[in-house]
Length: 306
Image (tube, rainbow, N blue to C red; front, side, top):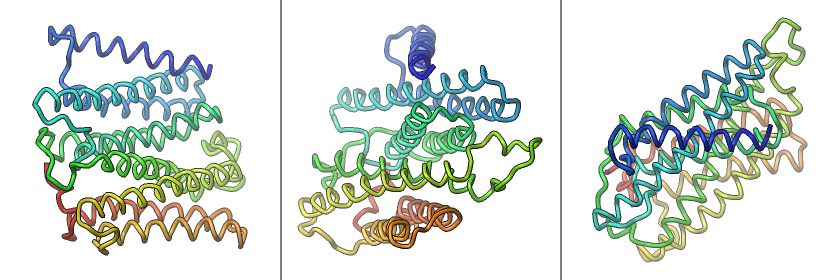
C-alpha cells in the first residue's frame, strides 16, 4: 500500500488539474487558482484522517493519504507555475522571495515531511493534526497576503536566496510536524482506556522517538540555512552577521533546539520535557517567521511586502 498512495495521489492530482484546465479552456491554470484549491484539498485530507481515526476505517485512511498526496503534488505544480509565470512577466525568479511564496513552500515542506513519515512508519492518524495546519498556512497565504508577482528587490537577487530559504523551510517543516507530535504526546494518556480514541494513536515511546528524529532533521537544515544566510548577507550587505532581529531570533531558535538535542544526549531527557521543548521551539520558529516581520524592523523587512 505504500507505493499505491503516492501513485493514486498523482493520478488524482492529474485528474483535478485536467478538469481545471478544461474548465478554463487552457492547458495552463493560474497558479493562484490552483494553490487556493490546495488549501481545501489539505483540509479534506485532514477530515479524512479524522474519520479514519474516529471510526478506525482503514479505507478512509487510504483515501485521506491519496488526497494528501494529490494536494502535495498540486502544491508543487502550483509553485512551479508561479515560477513559470514570473518568467512570462520578465522577472524570472524562483518563488521564494516574499511572504506569500515562503508560506506556500512552508505548507509544502510540512506536508512533504509528514507524508514521508507516513510512508515509512505506516501511521495515518497523525495526519489529523498535520494536514489542517498545512491548510491553514495555505489559507493565510491565499487570503491574507499579496499574491502579485513583482520584481525582486536588489538584496534578493542572489543564488544564495534559493539555498537559504529552502534549507530553512525544510527545517521549519520538520519542526512543525515535531510540534504536532509534541502536542499529541502531552495530550495522550499513558494508558488509554479501550474505549478511548487515544488507543489508536501511536504509543508515547514511538511519539517521543519520532519527535526527536524530526528535531534532529530540522536542526540540521536550520543550521545549513543559517550558514547559507550568513553567506548571502555578506554578499548583500557586506557583513556575515549584523544582529538583525531576524538573525537574532533565528539564532535563539537554533539554541532552543540545540539545547533539546544536548539535553537528550547528555541528560537523557525524554517524554514531557522533550515535547515541551518541541512546542517552545516551534513558537520561536513562528515568532522568527511572523513576529519579526510584522513587529520588528530590520534588514529583512522586505519579507512583509508583496
